[in-house]
Length: 210
Figure 1: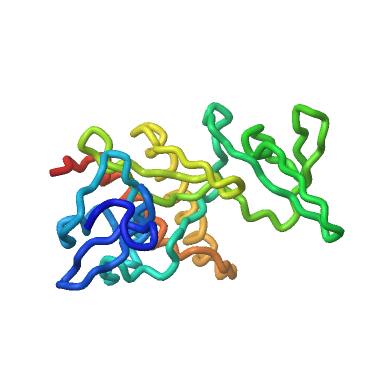
Figure 2: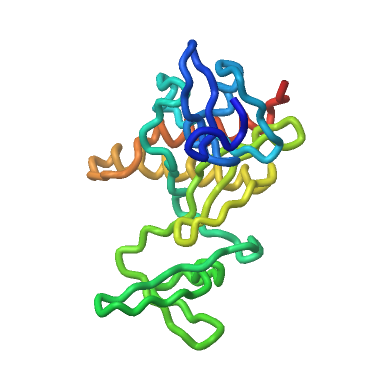
């Protein structure tokens, strides 16, 4: 199926049926390990594939529901040398709209953030933390792609950066297991799931893509 085909999406054939696998280079509905299962499509070097979340191993190509799923990286912040953040739009109930540079690029973990132009931005119920979202084929490896939860900008991780992110999941899993051992209630992510995610992050860098 030609790139930028029906309805401006990316389509391929799976088990004799035409399915949507993404939009432009974003393969929202296809994991990298599922590429060999589809036909009638030519992948490009810039394509980014859905991260292989362990709880989605049973889902077939094209059948993923949460198209832009991301998993928050626990207790980890985007390094300030990650360039390329976008803009964030703020809206008031009275009808004002304000676009500001993404505050997360300034690396301030406190409740409020000081922007270079003198604006002060507060956090309240913040959900814009960095997330693991995708994989991309780079130098025959499946490297992890993360996004800024605030502005949506994306970066691919080097092996060293990926190791730090994977360790963040492992450390948080251990913290949660300790809480369970002490009979403390915690409504966070399943520790086994977190460890599995960490393992898959690192496995991608050991993969030699064929």
